[in-house]
Image: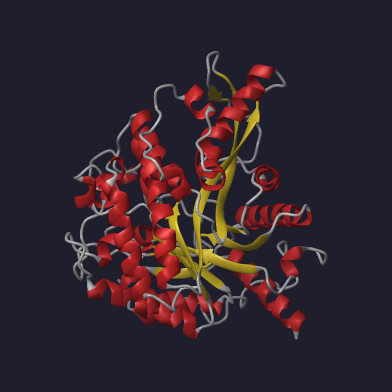
Length: 472
């Protein structure tokens, strides 16, 4: 391990390397991204970066259990150390501020701030107070996600998100955090990507807790959304000046042919990926087509639940990464038909910026009460290496430029998009893929914890500097 001081690389001078005139990133002059009120930041998540899983009273989470189970995570990796952010948070805030990023989206770890009886763990709370306090000192806008998948293991032992009681325990957690962090947070998100928590965690077993049953997935989703709906009024009462919302990952489905069956398959893909979450939030009902796709999977819904879930929001966070090309499976569903000769990332995901624009404009047309949108995650994994002290992540630079252009197109089409968060600030624990897949704009050497700013970060920093100068 290196000490904190030597772990920062070029944090104060992010544009020190390379020809500043050779810039393949800067948006055109008519882009909405030049607006001073368009927020540009970066995002992380607690389990992916913090480490320190056994320190200061933190309890085990479902991801500690899952990643310690042989065969669940690539190379047997775990989040036990991750980016050691719990000990290096000061240098990481300096890194963020040194790049000129205007906003930071982070998540708090439920197992770090409460014990099994729901009593506060002040050491864990103090960590987030110090972190958020420093961010505010640096004039960085703070977006805090309460749940980015790290459910306390003791709640999973009682059924996890299959148990309605977990929704009420989440409200206790939201109540504690919004009372303790009142004034430190500009925007609260209840959940990150409930689709992943429900489907990958309970539907196909790819994520913690590793269960595989579509009925489980549908019930887990209902309790996740119920937890969200119950928490919003508590957040409003405790921290009225902040904005409140939720973060959904969305996917673009396209038909493999123009046949009616394939077009229907693409519709069903988007029903299970998007409408499953957005219809309850903005229409107060589940899409009935979902149960055509998954017959017999209807969740147990109690009277008043859908009204609770349908509570008005200040913003919707959208996470977008790729599209899925699908065909009819010959029955009532769809099957993936990967396209040949298309650009893909290290994850194998197709690079398809038009999908982001199409989804945003589609949501505007579908949901009359759609709140303002932030792109809360967008980015890509590549096999980045430090060569002579530099990381030339050319594909990421192109990826970001094209996806920001897609956001601009959506704004010009009338969608109220107010900001964009790069995923991720730094390379980190990529869930079931461990440490092999690198999403950061800052490279992390996991042996030494040395941070190295990538070329993409330099160019984002240069754009923000230019935009700031334009306003003066």
